[in-house]
Length: 503
Image (cartoon, rainbow, N blue to C red; front, side):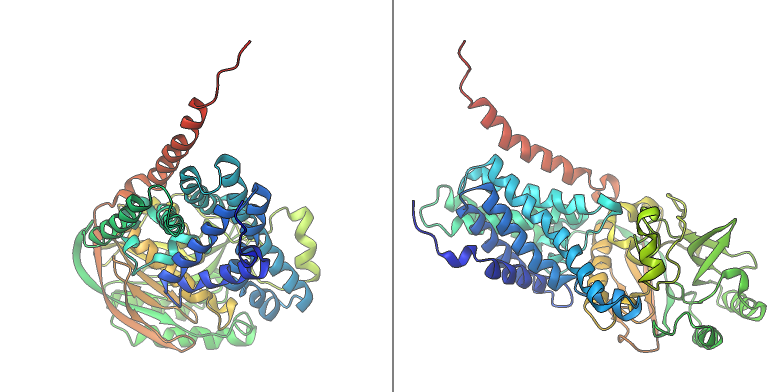
């Protein structure tokens, strides 16, 4: 057997290789770097002697990817949750290590079902990687952060597949092209030339698909004001800040003539039932004056349950959207009997035991548009966003990423909203506490962006759209169908090639 360069299997090399993959994601957007990083990992997997060795390589790579990609979890736990430094660091590392098990499993399974340097391995790796991204999107309520398809949003030609097969389908194609590049790196590899042509063809096809218009303009554009209050997270829930916060948002809203004014998630740091009558009266009058609506983030209390809500305060009886996909350990306590002590003794997080809103909300009718609202990281789940489509003409995401300080988390979250815009063919409006407040067009391009950590009112003209992309119609089913067909293409020939048992 040929001797292999030992550096390829060194855990530090693989760790750093995974770390470089983060450069494909926001705020860097260097999508070729992610492709090259993945190609190097695929080359390593092709040189592995055993599934165990491939699993170790995948784990080392995944640890670098997640330690550098979601390090900001530590900030939320320690800086704002006041968890002791050692415990916050350990919790963050354990989460990264758990996430790294997914690429480890991809490597192990790939070498289990296919031989090293084989065409079957070339097929197995991208299918299993994409399925692992999809699995992370629902297991333990889901944490699909750094799913590989996002690394191609919005500028890569591969992003052209987003309206058809969604982010997990783009993960599949991204890793497939990386595997093909790694395979073609071997000069004498069979099928080398056809694979090179296939890589070129997929890139060209993706570029062509990006030019297609899947949706059509709906009604006239409306004027929108996206308010960014920039309330420091460590002061946000202080009783001394309540009046100042209400006045700040009231002043920002009242100087606008926008038909739709959007305040961030939990912009008003109190129960909706406790809002001052003067505040509600002035906001309702403002909405009537502008012939539109004011959406405000607030906590609702009803029959012993608390909800993270957005209220349409255009009338005396506000219409509400209640968040349904809650953040585990942030908005509800999973396995409360086991983990409640963490909150009691080690972690100070307000509103950590909320209730879920309705599973299938309806868009709000505002100024001739049908507005679908989602709160915080709900927009990481494309299959949930399409529940309000194709009825909705505009998507509104509100968030409070101040929990993660001056890290890359807010920019990563913005990139996820860019993916949702491309999947749905809709304009996405984002109003956040400290950033990233922005308007994104249906092609995933950021058309307007407020400076981070500033008091800003971003005023834009937002065009609504009607119609359906294939992703709106089928969700993740097209991606899952492609994956199933690919697995059949791997297993059926192997099954048929088995020698018949003799009696």
